[in-house]
Picture 1 (cartoon, helix red, strand yellow):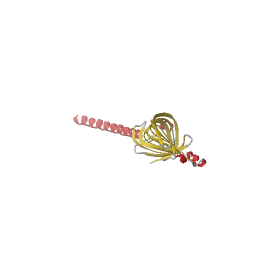
Picture 2 (cartoon, rainbow, N blue to C red):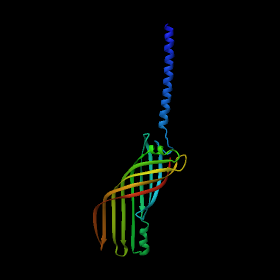
Picture 3 (cartoon, helix red, strand yellow):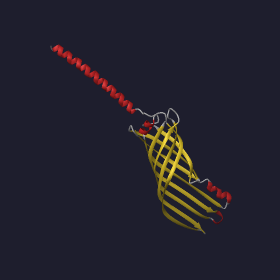
Picture 4 (spheres, one colour):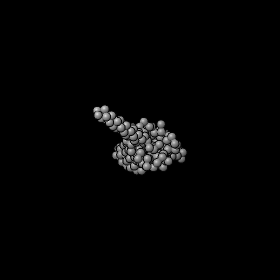
Length: 232
């Protein structure tokens, strides 16, 4: 009787262990499947995106804008990346004044450096499917920007010089569109709201005398950035 009871306990224990083992294997498979990117364009931890955009700002300022983003926190439906971008613009058309009349000299340029965080919307990329490699995101960039403007009339040594130091805040939305199955090379586009506030200083030199006026400035606008990049 004891042997019979012992055999029953042994058999049922084996059944429970086998069933439990199967359940654990299934659970592991589900966890693994959940952790794996469901879209080939999903930004993962340790991925590095390097990009470059350019254009013409204010119709006279050709500019270049390098940027980098590093995936740091995958959260299944989203991934958070951190990085930065910079921009540099130079007024090429300003030199036309010197061509028209070499008594005048005019130059104007700006540059800025910004920290940026992006929230990559993996859930949207998954919903679109694997046929198109999209990496949509929302982001925020913050940092300083510096402007310089100099106008000089050489014969009389008269000039107007303006400098501006500002803080730029850029909430934006955008997406990367990957061009290869390996999800390496991509095109991207950003739609940005640019908010800016700072302090400007203008110095006027006339007849050997200089006068300086300081003023607070603020502004805003919409900016569209288009460019290309590679995921490392």
